[in-house]
Image 1 (cartoon, helix red, strand yellow):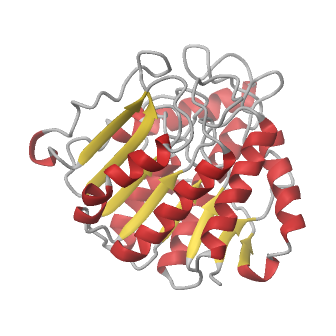
Image 2 (tube, rainbow, N blue to C red):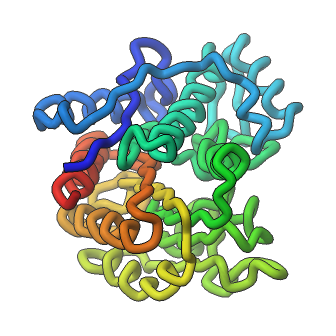
Length: 315
């Protein structure tokens, strides 16, 4: 059975927003409680979260934006965007911790300390280099992609996003980069924020063909996700990726209060299992999972447990 790097549950300022915001810290609390009940601690490599290193944010974010978040974190007033992402006292520290935890997971994989990694608070795919968006302050995905390329000199990275929302902050930040291969399976943007991710968008310039958007209609249910992944198998294999990052948002599950997809827990778990298996075919299993979205607390914690079972059971 494999080893999975995972941050300890933070004792202060976990990522999330004050009630009644839909992205609540309760998601992570429920997940860690259920994880303890699995009795798989011998296979989990816990590490303590750190917010000491501020420099990594500059790998993706503009200095002026980082300073803006720092300022808003002191006052705790207003919003970091047009109204979806509120400021609160300490938001800078908790958001920076998410980035550092995602980097730590990747480092532990690439240093040979673990086989895989999972950061449940990670996957903040809507943030852009110069702005927050869609509940996402800092884009840990964008940061870790550039960190992996800079520190470990890896060339090809595959990013798979199964969150119900299109991962616009990642997709458009790397749409001209041929070395970042992106598969994004999401609810059609005609019906859901951020309204992007058309199938015709395949990457720009020399990166054309390295990006793939798959839009699902509202109400898409069992087998929809797995079928979309299976249909993308050749695209994934052709990526020749050295490392695989998966934003495994649980907001596509039936009952989510924001989206309109109808996946079951079984379908979600089978999708993660499929991704895990194919990662061993292209990157020797170098696989980093990030929690992403999901706004039904029990759905989210149960889905993340399914994800953990999938990568632990099949190793």
